[in-house]
Length: 161
Image (cartoon, rainbow, N blue to C red; front, side, top):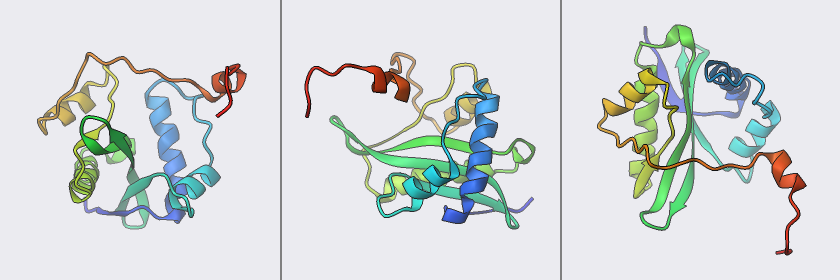
């Protein structure tokens, strides 16, 4: 099956949201998606875009996406973080995920990044095997920390900045 990879476009956002929901369902968190098409349009393609993306297409149908953003490492400098790599379930196995991953790798290389990072759930063996096939380092020693929006909103800060 033939497919193409290109930089994401604003008109991909509706398909991106469907893919994001598909991933949330797969990761057993179907009610966690609160982002909207408008968020994706503004935050990925607006004047102050904060993420970049690649789209996998089969004909005119969006079958996959990779969303990434730049971050900074105090040890390695400029870094690229792969937020999500998603290929719709019935199109997996045709090489689109590999092509999307390599597009992000090339983006990191072209930006002269000191590191490229991503996360994978410890039970997602197909993804773990995929990343290992590239010789990636999968570090089990780090624990992820996060605050949800509602936690940040409720917190009483001791100072104003």
